[in-house]
Amino acid sequence: MSQNADKIVDHFNLFKQPDYQEMFKNKQKMFENRLPADEVARGQEWTKTWEYREKNFAREALSVNPDKACQPLGAIFAAVGFDGTLPFVHGSQGCVAYFRSHFNRHFKEPSSCVSSSMTEDAAVFGGLNNMIDGLANSYSLYKPKMIAVSTTCMAEVIGDDLNAFIKTAKEKGSVPESFDVPFAHTPSFVGSHITGYDNMMKGILTHFWDGKAGTVPALERKPDEKINFIGGFDGYTVGNMREIKRLFSLMNVDYTILGDGSDVWDTPADGEFRMYDGGTTFAEAEAALNAKATVCMQGISTEKTMAYIQEKGQEVVALHCPIGVSGTDHFLQEVSRISGKPISEELKKERGRLVDAIGDSISYLHGKKFAINGDPDFCLGMAGFLLELGAEPVHVVCTNGNKDWAEKMNALFASSPFGSGCHAYPGKDLWHMRSLLFTEPVDFLIGNSYSKYLERDTGTPMIHIGFPIHDRHHHHRYPIWGYQGALNVLVWILDRIHLELDRNSMGIGTTDFSYDLVR
Image 1 (cartoon, helix red, strand yellow):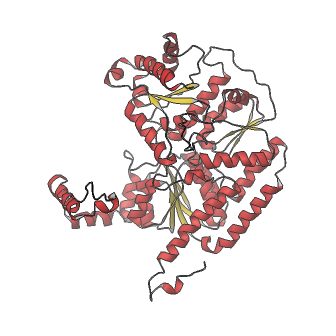
Image 2 (cartoon, rainbow, N blue to C red):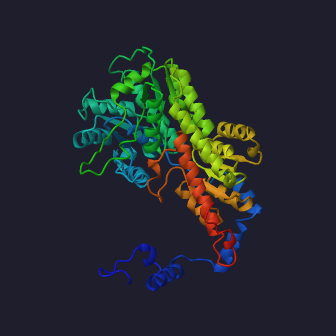
Image 3 (cartoon, rainbow, N blue to C red):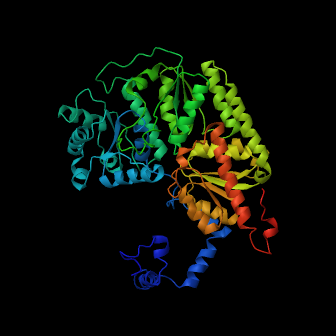
């Protein structure tokens, strides 16, 4: 074989070697039962047609590459944003291995999460014993300050009661009676990762504010002038949370971030392993009940949490991943209104610099057609920024979007002359997007790493923005919120536009009359 101890070849080149190519051909011939190449080609061509698109959009009982993950992934994300908190998923070990690897690959960081390791016997008799042993082991081995429990499909199908199980586990001595174990039911077969985030965030706040499952008196709200901030499920939380803190500081606003995972997803390589780092303290979580208002950066992914906070007497401001000039304007204006603090001169200068940057590049952006896929709030924010740039978000596909989301998208399109030919597709998957890109091509596609297969199939140049980003490094360290964040997004978009201009004009003596040194 081409690979041996004396000659180490990277996989990119290794599998091009003749012996591997021969092995692949034999595998196809002997085991894959492939159709003839010309028949496969005919089928592929048919899937590019309007006829196929109509059949594709008519399907109801099948999803092909849905652009979402399941609830426990979001619950884990919410949990790690609190000080010393270990996420505990009541379900099978395989599920939790997937959740950990998903975050590992996006953030390039260790991702701590444990499982009750339910197997076939637990599916028949219930997972109480798994909960008792799992909490005891987690508390003893990993020394968390809090364990946040969520569920997978198995536990939900058999009807395990987390509240009762946790109380029983405490009675059995798994953890001390006073130890904090908030929980949320997060069935994987409904909703998505943003639903799980919402359920766990609400579960944690309910735990602290409503008497810790009846073990202590519920907190009484004593209003103060602070502002709470909830980022939602956000793949750019490392960069975004630090940017939000900077913005609040520049306005001299007294704030509490509920669920701050920016440090645990970005630990330093200094010889010390940090299983837990940063996060909202329990004292801050309890005091957050007294805040004047809570600003949610992704209103659709925090609907239950916002309703719960509002019931407690706070004002709630729901935004939709504000990216760009007007989105950031609205965010800062709301913070200024609530806090009574003026928007600082430094932020006004940052706004002007962003407007200047857009003006410098508008000729490359105006009239460009885009497709977008991602979470509901992200799609709203990104489409709004594109319209602001004079671009057209023609296709916006959101697997975990609903009719209300589609109405918001349509209202956004109607607010701009560049939105007249744009359409929102709630509940659709990336195979639907494939049909859209073949039948109504656009100039560029914005999406997460799974979208790269659309680029391969349709030839639509892709810009990596979203969650997860597995095949590019360190994007999560940069903010996409605020004026500085919008500048990052602008640069990423322009880089791809200019790359395509170069690629399409580098033919020597044929197209290089447009191979410009200055763009």
